[in-house]
Length: 261
Image 1 (tube, rainbow, N blue to C red):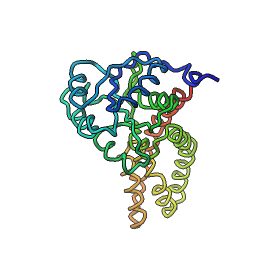
Image 2 (image 1 turned 90 degrees about the vertical axis):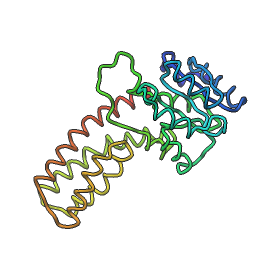
Image 3 (image 1 turned 120 degrees about the vertical axis):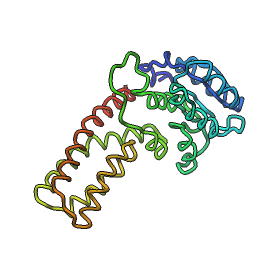
C-alpha cells in the first residue's frame, strides 16, 4: 500500500497555509509531507516574518514550530490572538513539536495554539491533524451556524487525533443513555444518583468546549449534595442540556464522517 492511500479522499488544495519552521532539516520534512498531501504554502522562518505575512496575506492556517527560539511560538500566537483584525485573530494554529506531554503543551494552548503534531511527523498524523483542526471551520460556501464545539482542550489533553475521535464516539454512544437516566432519577426523586451522574458527566463538557453546560451540572451536583432540591430548575437545566446535546451529536457525527472518510 502506498503512503498516499490514507489521504486519497481528502482534499487540502484549497487550504491557504503559512509554514513557520525554524530548523532547516525539520522544514525540509514538513515541506515534503505538505506537498505529498497536495498543499500549497508560504514560508516564514521567524516571528517577525510570521506577523508580517499574516498582515499581508489571507491564510486559513499556520503550521508553527513550537520548539525553535526564532519562532517564539507563545509570543507569536499571543500576538495573533490579540490582533484587531478578526480574520487574523481567529487563524488556526497547528503546532509541530517534540513535546510529549500535555502539561508542557498547555502553555502553548493558553497562548492560542489549537492543536499539535509530534515529531517525527508522519504523513497520516499531519493529514489527520489538518482534517481535525479545519473541520467545520473552512468548509467552502457553508451556510451552517458556527460550531458550538471547541476541541482545543481535548486535543491538548489527548494529542493524538484518533484518541480524540474515540472519545467523541464514546460521547455520542453514552450520552443519550446518561441523559435518559437523569430523567429517570428526577421522576423517582433519586437525588443521590442524580447528583452523582451529573458529577460524572460534567468534565466531558469542559473538554469539548462547553463550560456553561459544566456549570449547570456543577449546580445540580452541589444542590443535590446540600439537599437543596429544586425540581423545576433541574427539569429546566436538563431540557437545556438535551437541546445542546442534539447539536453536539450532529457536529460530532460530521467530524467523524469527515476525518474517517
